[in-house]
Amino acid sequence: MKILVLHGPNLNLLGRREPAVYGAQTLDEINAQLGVLAAELGVDVAFVQSNHEGALIDALHAAQGAMQGVLINPGGLTHSSVSLRDALLAVNLPFVEVHLSNVYAREPFRHTSLLRDVAVGVVLGFGADSYGMGLRGLISHLRRRVGDAGPPAG
Ligand code: DQA
Image 1 (cartoon, rainbow, N blue to C red):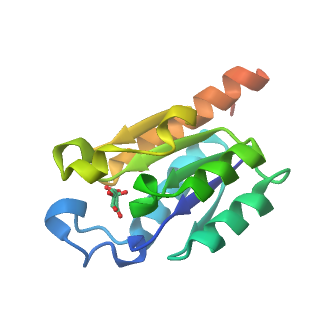
Image 2 (image 1 turned 180 degrees about the horizontal axis):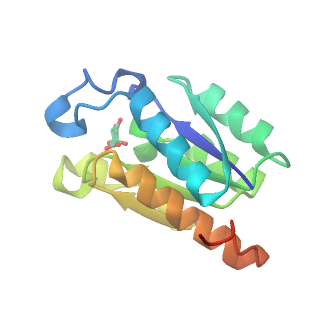
C-alpha cells in the first residue's frame, strides 16, 4: 500500500515559521517520523511539498493509479481552494486532512475547509502528532476497505 503525503504552501518553513503556533519541528523531521511510522505499519509513503497550488494538483493526478490514499495538510489552501477539492474528487483517492494547529481556535477565516466534507476524516490541533494520527486513521480505513490485515503481528 502506498500513501502520498502532501504538504501545502509555507509548510517548508516549519521550525522557523510561527513556532508558537506550529511547533519547533522541521518538515524534514516530521517526514522522517512519518516514514518510521509508515514502516511500522507496513506501508510505503511518498512526500511532496509545494507552495504552488498547480504543483499539488499535478502530484494528485500522478498519484492516481499509483497510490491508494492521501494524507494532506493543504495549509492556507484548505480555506480557499476549489481546485484542490476538485482534484481530490477527480482522482477519487481517499484522503485525510491534517493540521498542526487547532484552526477552530484561530481566525474565523480558518474555520472553513473546502475539503473536510469529502475527507475520510480530519485531525487537527496536535502539532506534528496530527500527521501520525492521520496516517494511522487513513491506513485503518483503507485496510477495512480492502480486507488487508497489514503486517503480521509480533
Ligand atoms: C495549517 C493551518 C492553516 O490555516 C494555515 O494556513 C497553514 C497551516 C496547520 O497545519 O495548522 O498553513 O494547515
